[in-house]
Image (cartoon, rainbow, N blue to C red; front, side, top):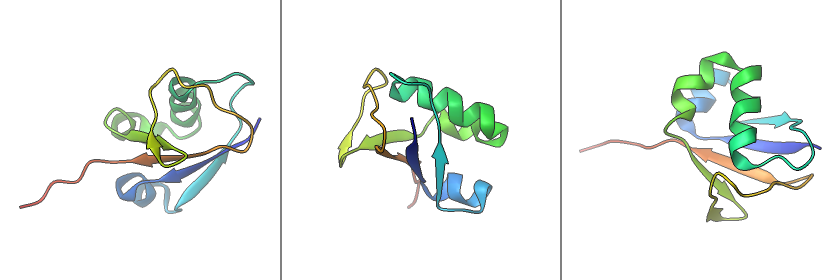
Length: 81
């Protein structure tokens, strides 16, 4: 199964690309996708802890199953003042 992962600003800076294509196992959930991304890109491990997953324009819970071709945006919190 292939899933496109759009990276929030903080993650995109680390990766130097705006998106990744990953291949989690069939039946993977959003939580499993985080594990796949962290395993393939160890520098993401810490920032992924605060990333918010968005699938089909809505916040996705960690247990949401993913389908082949899904696009998951991993948005990182922004602070400002």
